[in-house]
Amino acid sequence: MRYLMGVDNGGTFSKAAIFDVDGRQIASASASVPLYTPRPGFRERDLTELWKANGDAIRLCLRESGISPENIAAVSFSGHGKGLYIVDKSGKPLGRGILSTDTRAHEIARRWQENGVAKTVGEKTHQPVSACQPPALLAWLKENEPETYGRIGHIFSVNDYIGYRLTGEAFSEYTIASGGGLVDFGEKGYTRDILACFGIPEVWEALPPLKYSTELIGRVSREGAQATGLSEGTPVAAGMFDIDACGIASGLSSPEALCLIAGTWSINEYISPIVVTGEPTTRNSFFCQPGLFLVEESSPTSAGNLEWFIRTQLSLEKQEVERGGKSIYDVTNSWAKETDPEENRVLYLPFLNGAPTSDDATGVFFGLTEATEKRHLVAALYEGVAFSHRRHVEKLLRHRPRPDRVLLSGGAANSSVWVQIFADILQLPIQTVGGKEQGAQGAAMAAGVAAGLYRDIAEAAERTVSPGRSAEPNGTRKEIYDKKYQAYCALENGLQTLWKAGM
Image (spheres, rainbow, N blue to C red):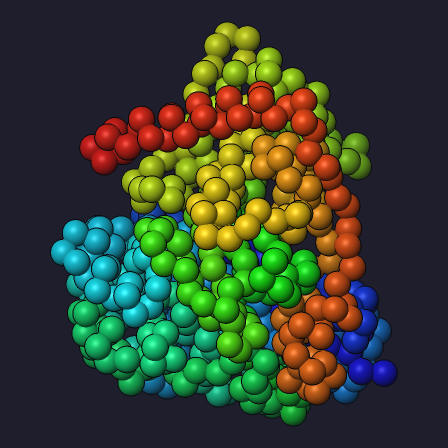
């Protein structure tokens, strides 16, 4: 029997999972990758540690599955978009990789918005510029670390870098490259004009050739096999942006569907045969199925906020419940469920890494009193993340019909309490997917198409996706949440002046 492997690299973990051709997850494994924050706004990871984590996760997954490496028909990748991973001309890392939550280049992005570069380039890339995209980060390197900038040999995404280490071949792929503001939609590729507008024409030769998600980029090399336990010669497909991977693994295969991914980023998306323009925050990228586009509203404002709160405010509670064999998520879910949304007047703006309206925005708890407890803060955090998604969804619905249901994946989808809050705040039915590693499953779909096991992504989704928990909106909470949402928006809008002043 033949199996497929997907490898997913998010902001914290490297994960590998093996699936059969019907989408049943056989085994999964993960390894953490240390985060470095040497200065405010900097979020980095060591590329050697990243590659080791991928190798460890793949090797452990193979061992846990009991499957012979020779039975892996193909492997592919899912990973965070934006950010920057660069190597020199000999393939050695040039400093650390930069994550998609990095904001060091926010002044450059602001400059481009003010001087017209963003508008000029956006007409070709159909992307608003942002501090975490490769063009802004490359411009930052040119201004602040010119020696490093001058030694760049290849410009990679996280997927590209792992594919390079696994095969020895330097390629990039359309979903992440277009989502990073590097692709001219009319030309269907890089152009020197775009690089010149950004002031980084020197990197032209460092941009790897582009492939579609389901195209082969090479085969596992001897060095890749030694590092991972995969068989030398195993086919490797280009893979895709994790927002595509989680989307297709949730059933996003037609323009009628609307998909939300609640992970580190608040991702809100749908498929379209045409690009959508007119909204300053709406992003278009190439979809993993050629000929279609992914229309996206996003910001780094989602379920990652809960990880921060647990790490910084609930360390003692976490230790205590784990000694009892339980999870801290059992505690936070219980607190959110037991807190009456009408009684809880606390609002939370989930802007630890900026907001859709401002890279300078910061997180806010508003409405604290002497009666406020940690459960109120957690409930407000659950609601604030869902409010952030709602603000994005309302912009998308200006350009398409309201869906019959919403497909939800990411960390928030693991909580039935949070799923219900999403349904109540959006006033739409929510459908999640059965407990799988969705990013890795989407990557495995691409591997399956490349190996000839599926005709295309749509067939792969039809064959492998199975529904998980669902939630219907509670109509009695519509008025409560509408009122709180209006207050949330008013608070966000009212703080713009303070944020711009550096507060």
